[in-house]
Length: 195
Image 1 (cartoon, rainbow, N blue to C red):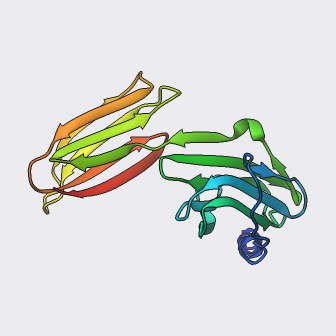
Image 2: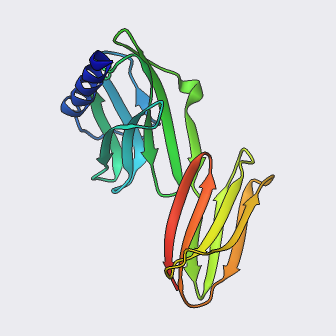
């Protein structure tokens, strides 16, 4: 067990230390090369997008805020990670893209067929109206929970929406503070509202 922890720490350190080669190039999709140093290239990133590398349990091994909009390119030595399943996750404004890979005996393998894009729910408050929208191309559900955030944390409304690709809900808000919790695609999104 101690050896696994030491190797995991070494792997995390290697990923962090060997993250190099930032550059920009022309249009295209995210591309990855299966070599000792993995070159990750993602087009159409924006400043403030979040790139992480996570293990199969969701533990963050590497995290970076994208500093410039355009094309993101960086090299990673993923072969030093312990055997297991991992994924890159790019958290953008309204979507999260995951790029899964596995490490077996220092060999990194990407499965392009398992790449996913999920669309995040969007909540906007304007003129005392809370508008929630979500694109659900695979008919994934959205659970909406609205809490009072004035010290009581009282649940004011909850519902789960299923069976539609375009989810839209509107709520009239009274003056006050609210906590909005949206759950979809095994992820939770929280927003605090002062109305």
